[in-house]
Image (cartoon, rainbow, N blue to C red):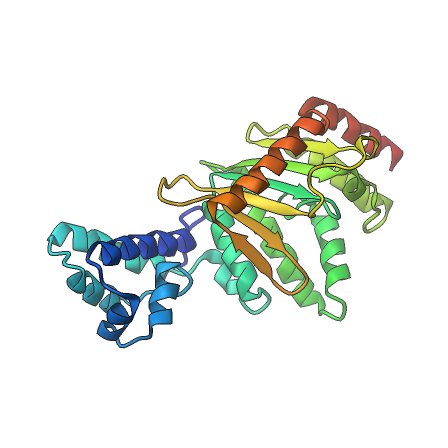
Length: 288
C-alpha cells in the first residue's frame, strides 16, 4: 500500500469508521457479542474496532454492514472505502522499529489535528525543537542507542515538524515553563540555536508560544505536561495526551477533557503574552 501523505490521517479514519459502526450497531440493538460472532471474532475485538484501535478487514466491515441493515449501495461504498483508507500505513510506520505502539498512535492523531495545544515543563515541545536540541534530548533519553537509531529518531521529529509550515497547517499553541528554557541541554551553542529556532517559530501565523515564568509561582498545571488535540471532523472529540516513562494515556471523556481545557485556558491567561515571550526569548539568547 502507498504510505499516506502528510495530514491525511489513517488513525483518525479508523476512529471515525469505528464510531460509525458503533452507531449502526446500537441503532439495530445488536450486541457486541452478536457482532463478533458474525465476523468470527470476540466481543472485545468489536470493542477495539469501534474505538479505532485496530485495523479493519474489508470483509469484516462488509459483513457488519449487512448485519446492521445497511442496504444502500452508496452508503456501503463510502464506508468500505473508509475501511480501505484507514488501513493505509502512515509515513511514520517506517519508523516502527524505534517507535513504541503507544506513541505511533499519538503521531497519527497529531498528523490529523487542526489544533494542538501543549504545556511542557522539562523540555521544549518536540514540534518546536531545533535539530541540535532534539539530538541532545534524544541521546540523553536513549543511553546506549546507536548513532543510526539516534539519527532515525531525530529524522522522525523533524518530519513531524514539517506539517507546521505545510499547506493546511494545524494551529499550535504551546505554553513552556521557564524551567524548560533555563535547563541547559547540549551546551551553550545548542541552546542558542534552540532560542533562535523558537523565535522564528513563534513568528509563524499558526504558532503561538507563551512562557510561564518562575515569578508567577505555583500555577494550574500542577499535574505536569500534557497536550490537547482537536480535529476538523465534527464526530471526533478532543483528545488529551499525557505521557509517562513507559506509555501514555489518551483521554476523550468530556469531563476529563474539560478539566484539561480549563487548566490550559488558565495557563494561557497567567503566562507571559506571546509578544512578551518573544522578547524574553531574545533575552535568553543574549544570555546564552
